[in-house]
Image 1 (cartoon, rainbow, N blue to C red):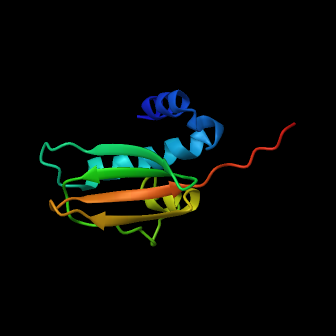
Image 2 (image 1 turned 120 degrees about the vertical axis):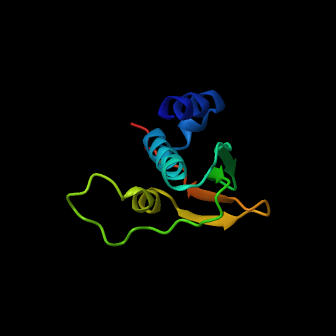
Image 3 (image 1 turned 135 degrees about the vertical axis):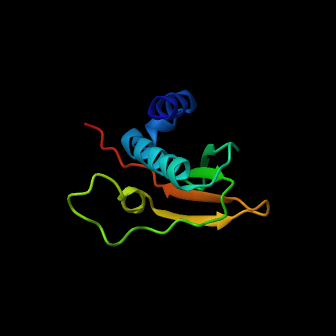
Length: 118
């Protein structure tokens, strides 16, 4: 998944405006959550990267209507369970919206990076 995200961002020139590491983490965390937690019953999970209004909107569509909730009770020794907290840290905003077909879209908006010439 990270390679696909990197290739797409470079192909579209998005790597000039957004930190690729942040984009990769947000996409992979949202996608992994959909794979692990959504009841997708063999239906596709779709990832969309859409630059709009200055931000890069990352969307993950899946057929499960259950909206995600961040795990606020984190075991500091755990190796999983921090995905949405990472997304919340890296994204300007994030959320989830039910879809008319019974699925949902989980989205995150990443602000452009400020690079200093040097």
